[in-house]
Image (cartoon, rainbow, N blue to C red; front, side, top):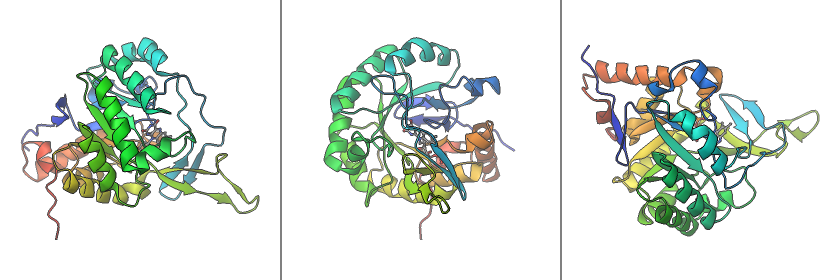
Length: 307
Ligand SMILES: Cc1cc2nc3c(=O)[nH]c(=O)nc-3n(C[C@H](O)[C@H](O)[C@H](O)COP(=O)(O)O)c2cc1C
């Protein structure tokens, strides 16, 4: 079979292959680095960072569901300064792109974090406007076009030369409204989907399984929703590159997201069952491209043939 060029571009940043570790499922890479060279990955989205350290939500904060999991981790992280001092130097040892994922309570917090991360030299900033677990406003930014635009604008003003990728929430009636608002406010790329709000109840105790009552659904169950939303967003703002995610565990899943319009894909929940999942996704994508006679994997992007 012919060699397939796996390189893709995301907002002008070249990835050696289209597969990225999804934020919140890969920590800062240290645990997975025991299994393989992190330089095998196209990129690593780090755990969601906040302006100051957060302990996250009380346990239980993970519940299994058919074909997925619910989580209410609540952005447990050491804070942006500790990330820059202690985790970024570790990640920089590897030949991969480092994507900093950030969540703020106010637009100003997003701006401050962008300034610090830009000075520290991350490759991309992923602005999480969609986390459903944080009571302090996280949901609102991703569900209202004007708030999404405000946060995007603030991030862009402070990110310097580092491209800003806005991560969209699927918990909205029309995701293209938010995508357009972020695009108009200057986003360089979009990523989607974050988790879908869900709930599970123990019928004997009549208590929700999660201490926070509700959580975010991820894993194979959400893939068709992710494919549909990537397709809608790509159609609405075709000029913006998309990092697609939601339920990817193999090459076929990733190829679907790319055909729907994603330039690259992230693997999250699948990592919990198999730390090698991103490498299998990469190899699966290569096989699909080769089988179809493509010389570059990026020709899959947006190539769906809708009826
Ligand atoms: C345990 C867990 C923690 C997560 N933490 C974050 C986070 O900190 N920031 C963020 O933007 N997304 C976070 N996510 C969402 C994922 O990055 C991803 O968008 C979502 O899980 C869908 O992909 P998947 O089905 O491959 O997991 C988290 C997901 C899980 C399962």
